[in-house]
Image (cartoon, rainbow, N blue to C red):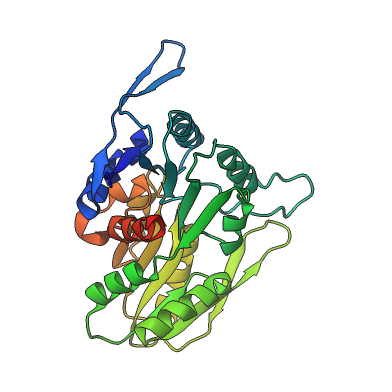
Length: 307
């Protein structure tokens, strides 16, 4: 049996070497360029007929969505036997439901778009990593087989490396993530904690009203599925420190960190360390020792499904 072909969209080129190192792939070749009017030219140079193909590409931006769609569609139409789309980060994951009348559930419209990629003979599989909400997996059409890969083993191992044998508390930014933190805390055999928040009905802003656990004299490791601007993270870190925590660390499955968000988090002075996975290009802003690669886990999961 020939090796699987691996293609990646430009934004995820940084993760491709780790995938090639973690699995037995042949690297697919493409030609890309831009026309003066901004339109993109894409040509697949590798013969795909009868091959099993993996496309590596998350959707941090609208352009990336189209990159995945165009590349995967071209691969399917060129005679690939099967197609696996590995998405380390699924964009618009927090827009998974309508809160106000007229709001567009973009997580669902994106899933519908990707579901319309032509299906090769051996079918299409989509691998999603640490979704903000489990139900997003089922937004995809039934013609597409989806698998939600949880990052708990990767996250807990990184926490263990950083915290060592010392006692600590695993914290959440708010009660909304308490279920996830409780699960991780059980795996780590530590106590979970979260902060209580109250939302101002007029301004929409939130204020911390308390912490549910005794963190006095202990360090707190805050887990969240993603860090964007980090405003909620800073607010929670201040609450834990005010409650008596000696230090506060943070770890996230997705390090989005737009603009100067990472610099602002460091400048806040409330976080001793910030860690996460390389699921998003924003992870490149962190020192290498603070980032753990999810490539081995994603490769292992996609190989298991292929077999």
